[in-house]
Each structure stands twice: as C-alpha cells, then as structure tokens.
Length: 124
Image 1: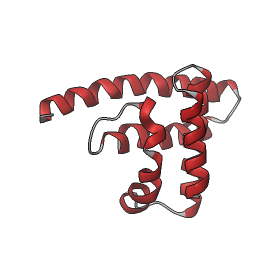
Image 2: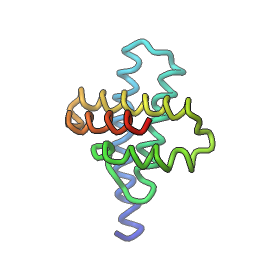
Image 3: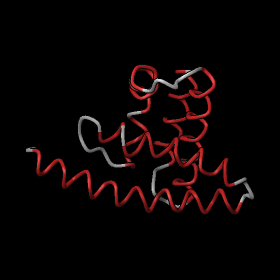
C-alpha cells in the first residue's frame, strides 16, 4: 500500500468512526451522563480508533477487538505522557462501553466483544 492509498483508507475509516462515535455519544447522553463524562469517554475511544488503530496501518473499528492488547501493552503507556494507572482503567472502561454499544447496534460480533473484554481484563 502506498502513502496515497494509506491516506485514503484512513480517511474512510475516520469518517466511519465519526458515525460510531456519534452513536456512542448519543447512547451516553440517553443514560444521563454529564457532558464532561461523555466527552471523556468519547475522547478516550477517539484516541484508540483514530490514532492508535491508524498509527501503522488503517484498521477499521470492527477489528479493534484484536488490537487492544498492543494499545494498552505498548502504545498507551509509551506514547501517551499522561498515562497513569487511573487513566489506563478509565480508557479501558471507555473502550469496553463503546464496544458494548457497537454490539447493541450490530456493528460488532458478540464473540469479538467478549474477546475484547477478556483481553482487557487479562491486561489489567
């Protein structure tokens, strides 16, 4: 894949991700979470989807269950200067909530959601 193809694939995935994040934001608002809490969850998931999963190659959200180990095991603790045990737990919680929402909307498979949750639990 050359750079132009990479850029094009990333742009398409980012557009898709914006739709998914909007669904997530709406679901959190329906649960009466504060705007600050909603923004934190969305920001955490945005970091995962639009930065980490596009970092080396364009990976769509649906394949995110297989990337979470590298995110928490390397990227987040090495590349994010603000990472602490508390931010790791907060980000893990946001990602699990996001993928549960995507499961409820039929955007991911139940087995993939279960794999994601088990990986996060094992990594913690």
